[in-house]
Image (cartoon, rainbow, N blue to C red):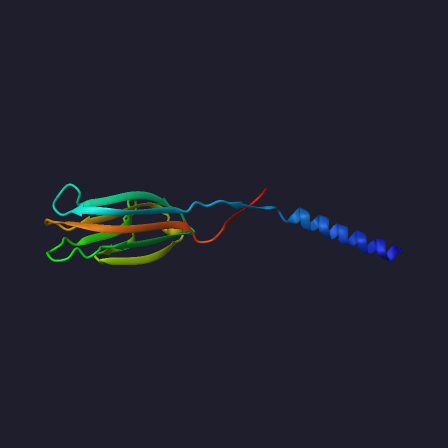
Length: 147
């Protein structure tokens, strides 16, 4: 009987030590941002560019998709796109003139910062439509230990 009590006491001591060492985990609710829309850019006019700014954090990913629908005959201005850090000048998405774009980038600590998402058309005349979809989300669940 004494051995049973000794085993129970050892188990209770181990459980108490484990509870003391391990802290409760609290899940930080990280935000998911989506930006979707349709742009009508005018070559050579006041509406020749569209941009928005976002603060991007580490352990996030940015997925950018856009499409320039075929407008049929005639010459269209070329759509340019890039995402760059206004402070450091570093490009997150390098400048491209693709008509269809679909790319995902993960952000590390050195990538975090204030970024500008920018679409513009080269000089000329005519209008062009751009359908865009931007998703900014955490790459994994972010945990914080309770102290």
